[in-house]
Image (cartoon, rainbow, N blue to C red; front, side, top):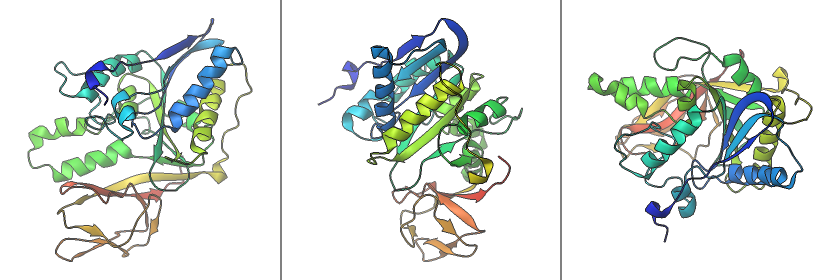
Length: 319
């Protein structure tokens, strides 16, 4: 049996002699998402054997960001590490203790690539951050660099709007607005925290958890990132042509209001729904209809009442 207090945290750094950006690449933020861990391990083996060399800048690998969740083979240790990711003066759980180690590590880097996977069969995709802005929710100034990196990872599907849409949902459901900022913090994970430090970051969903191709997606993305940022001696990867891209913006989050609310069919992320199509039923039998032609994201059959049930996105042509 794994004892949380006996676990340690591990990062491995490779630094070149030339100037360049400081990159951090992570796997297993969720313990059952191992594609990134396998991709990272493969690249580290090449570096350790001398088959690959870091010439400029540096790269830090975190093969297993959440060792407790990884040991359990489950998404979380005590809770979801990819929420409320801030240092804590008084850590309450294992993920708080990870944050006290991980957040300063992230802040010492310029760029983050966070490697994940997902439950249902679907194609890999990358979550990108906001447009450049000076707003209160997620101010940002590296849109061009971040989206240029997204286009060389080797995937063709791109999604933005996570924190904005999550924040809209929080504001809608909050009764005590004095708690709003505290609850909004819960939407901050690895990439959102990285952007608060002045860096830029991407979450790459490499495929279904057990798909043997998912570690290949992770490996290719790592190698392309190292080449794109000039850390290794390799040709610059070719960006995905715009005509081959599928770019979606998250628009709405819909909550489960009662435990008896249920979906009308088994939905998977990226399923399309037409305006007026039934998505589910409330506990009293009231149909829940799509308000517009949309793409469903992250449908959660196990959601509890007053929590996110599913998100809706729209195609966006202006990447």
